[in-house]
Amino acid sequence: MMRFILFFFGGVLLIPAVQAQERVRNIRVRAIDSAQLEIRYDLISARPGDSVYFDIRSRVRGLLSIRPELVRGDVGRRIVAGSDRRIVWNALANGYALDEEIQAIVRVKAGVMPAAPEPTPEPVTPTRTAPGATAPTPATPASPEPAPDQPRQRRNRDRPVPEPAPVVQTPAEPAGPETPAIPGGSRVGRQRYDGPAWALISAVAPGIGNIFVQRPRPRVGFRPLVTVATYGLVAYGLMERQQAKDAYADYEVQKNATAAEPFYVTANNHHQRYFMATRAAAAVALTDVVLTFIKGLRNSQLRREARRIDAVSVRPGLQMGQPTAVLRYSF
Picture 1 (spheres, helix red, strand yellow):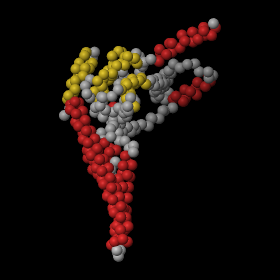
Picture 2: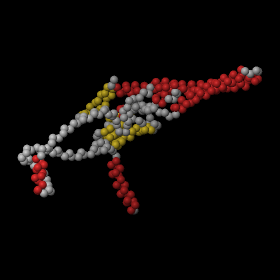
Picture 3: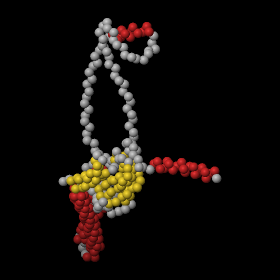
Picture 4: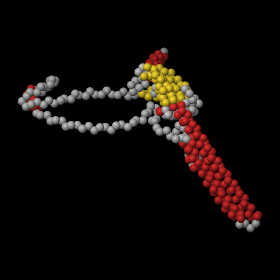
């Protein structure tokens, strides 16, 4: 009975702690169109310095890489607590088609409160007096020093105070433009090229050009093995060709057909292996070039479609407490 009572009170004490950690609830995800994804959530509480960010996890690809310049809405810092907060992510321009099962996770990162500045003591301006005159004495706390020391202090006050040297301030260099970033994401960078021109690299080194047409970032994987296999087949075919020539030369110097027959068969076998190896290398290289060209062409089409969708966009906004509609047009 005593153990049951302890478990009950322990559970009651843990309930407020668990509830206090909940900052975001009621997360909803929907596709606006074939390119954009909308995330809505309720922010229960927000403190100065907190930042809101989100992650997208795919069942097939795992955690997706989100480019900050393709995200807009209630994300980042200075997000006010409230219900129905909205985030819009252009997934198609980011290199992801909205044709798979995904999960959105909205998080709140607690910021560090700035320390209160220490009070600056008021400067004391020295007073210059003429010899023989009595300077006004400011009201100061009672000093524990005995009375005989007061004439010495008065003589020190009567001495002329030297002028302070002027302080020359060196102007600080202006700070450069800072690249915008959101919590949980990478900084905005220059968009790399992933078009069909990488097929030219695959024509020289099969498998290498296909690395750079992968999205959202280049992926190596087993693609260098395609290069090794292609050039390995070519080298093997050239060696077989040389052996076929040597066997055929031995065949030509024989005196009769019976003695020459084994050399002819050997030369023919080496020539067949040369033919198969070189044709296989050509097939692997051509397949890689075609796949790289198709993938790069698809990437260019996705980029043009994303640019066409982003050319004109209308989204609701709030200015000075009044609802507004923000129209953006780019060309």
